Length: 229
Image: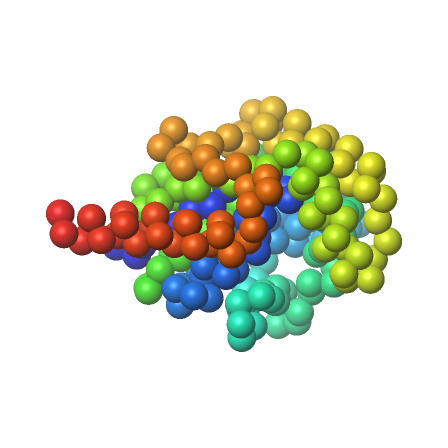
């Protein structure tokens, strides 16, 4: 079976950057599940679809033509929709908020479930999201739940937006992160929470390089022990 590393956690915990670096260093495929939900939101706005209208939203989710391409060095992943890069549309706060809304719709989650599982093919998959270890890949070889304080996560997001030349308000970012945490953890379908067998890793004050190294070491230990079993 294709090995899977599932990395879950709230926004700003570092799972996106960590997942990209791990996928690049391992030579594995990458699933950015959050981008799928952002894409549903972006497509819905383009088509003037109401976010309360489940049927057309699930149709959008079911028919997404998406690909994630890791750029050399592992620092950048381009998201392509219908053959075109769309990252400039996905990394806005509006897209993030819309993703949290559509992710709470069971019909959308059902439509995307098999699509996400189809990303798992040799030599391996790093799956980044909020329910990778609990719902999408419950049999993942290693499940990691990354977290950090709301203040640090807001600071990280603020720095990221500034580096992209975008305006940002630190207080508003923290409030939005906390609001999204509540929506994601309180939703009835696939709420944000660690899998029972997940390694919960608080990244507050921990550098990205150290986080990547620690996860890779643990993953290699798991794969080695299973290979010799």
